[in-house]
Image 1 (cartoon, rainbow, N blue to C red):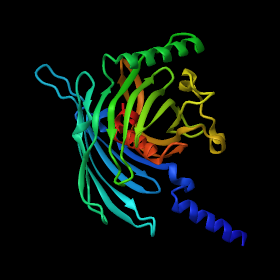
Image 2: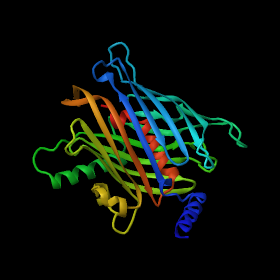
Image 3: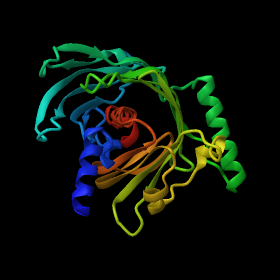
Image 4: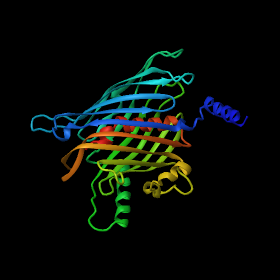
Length: 334
């Protein structure tokens, strides 16, 4: 009787969309970056995003910016891929989305999101339709926006108060201006609109993020970081550990930007927001000059991980995972 009660309770939770894994998105990526050896070669990233309702595969192919006295080309990325909805009755994957297009990063960092589109195939009683990403990004601009500059200044101020000696003040910035990730194919998923900034600090090898996602008319202000670190006691492997928290009584200040991942404790007492870990197995290293300094970088990466939502809808977790996927060159490239 006790087992029957557990089974019945599980069925009720599943039928109402409250399955334990409902806020978890699995992330996989295989990256090949020959441009680190040959600037004219194209880099490719194959990204998989899977959750309880949607399974998506994206292929991102990028051309690095090329300079020249007569003519040059801007950095550009093409995106293709498709996504399937998972039938809750039998687990069958039903094709629903087709991705196409891409974007060009202008010399000032301006990137138009509307160049990337999604085609929704007819499924069941839902007719075929079309959608687009929208809004803009500023990817690693020479002159960051005011908000990005303020975030950068607060990060450098914190670093200088906690570390001594010569500080590496190099940073990369990414700004989101009403950047819209459309529905993954479910009628209930209306997509999410993102605003805010990300700053990568070379000193701490970490992304610092201050973002706001608007999904289904509700806003979710998220603040935190995603450090890039060597996996302890494992060779040729790095990892990203993401901690993005919603405002709370004990995490409502800039301290949330510098919150440290708590490891296994997150499994039992995770902060509200988005957390996760991506493990990167690396190979085929080359020496590359990055912003005037030599660094050893992998040209081949095999990544796996999960992103988890706590008191935040699956749509928001899925949308953020999609951003990491389509901006794979930003997060995993040079």
